[in-house]
Amino acid sequence: HHRYQYDALGRRILKEDVLKRTARRFFWQGERLLCECDAGRFWPGRLTDNPQLQEALSDTTHRVWLYEDE
Image (cartoon, rainbow, N blue to C red; front, side, top):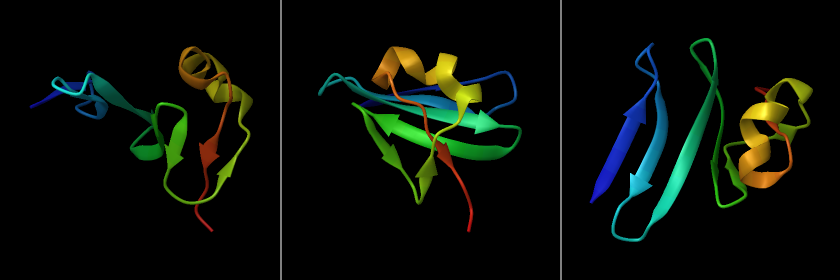
């Protein structure tokens, strides 16, 4: 069973598996998905440091990443 949270713009920001007690967070810049993280892992593609996301991600992984299209 999953539970979802969305921000005021309708973008998914959290997906929780209630039975497994796990969560995946989604980080956005406008309409662009920057990254997803789950227990310190990130998806998709190539990831690079980005100081602007430090506050958003620091409580989850203590590392900051940004997804960049090639």
